[in-house]
Amino acid sequence: MTEETRYWLMKSEPDVYGIKELEKEKETLWDGIRNYQARNFMRTMEIGDKVFFYHSNCKPPGIIGLMEVIAINQIDPTQFDPNSKYFDPKSTKENPRWDCAKLKYLKEYKQLLSLKEIANQFNDKELILVKKGNRLSILPIVQAVAEKLIITLEKSE
Image: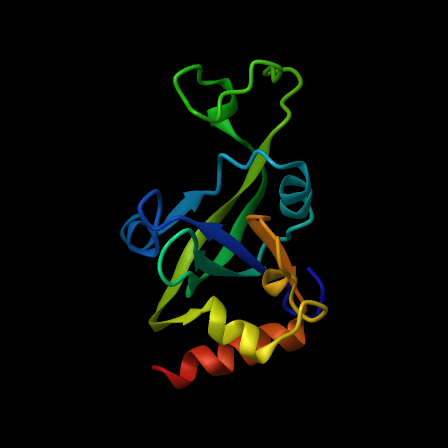
């Protein structure tokens, strides 16, 4: 692991898997990613990296919690399950195409930091999340931006 803490943002729809489910389960495999760029970002994660939990496809979308990477390079089991919506018939046990990270719950913030509030603080060069048309479910966040996000989130505590 590097000296600096590395940060990420990972999106999930709260009605599919929200911060409350993670809090209850304590840890989870972040499976079902079927975008190569998002998968490749996940492949560069390191144990100990911090991850903002972002509720997407809801009103309002935004950062609601914080997680930590506790395992990397995990094979995504959903790619082999024909009953899963994430089933990939081209993926085999000998040559899996999809993997994931294991994350643990750290905290839920008392107040969601909305995308609108985030966009008021950062431009798309600082934080790709606010770039128009961005749909990636996993994004890297530079340390300076992450620290500002944490300060803003903790002000609402």
